[in-house]
Length: 129
View 1: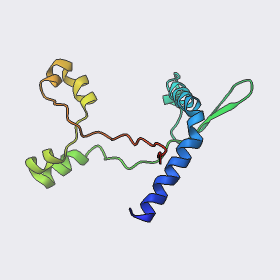
View 2 (view 1 turned 120 degrees about the vertical axis):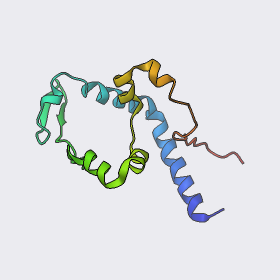
View 3 (view 1 turned 135 degrees about the horizontal axis):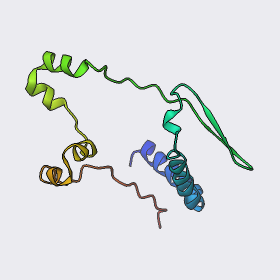
């Protein structure tokens, strides 16, 4: 076996073992963060602003939104003109959620298939000798 790969596997195993007793707390923290992000009016805070929320023992600060590159409103029609229809459509990525919202679940159900193309779990286990 590749020594570098073995070293990485052993490090991942060691980190996983140290975190295992905290798995429930880590999952709860993730759920609580998701819950906080659903609070009303969060989407009305300017993207470059921060907002603090106070508990009796802790505070939460919602940071400024990360900067992402996005298409200008005129970009799709400009790309369509540059690429022509076939190449443009080959590059388009329509999300299932957006399509379902636009045309309904029944119409989308006839257009999709399920394939094993998602992420794969990594199962870390201590080796037995």
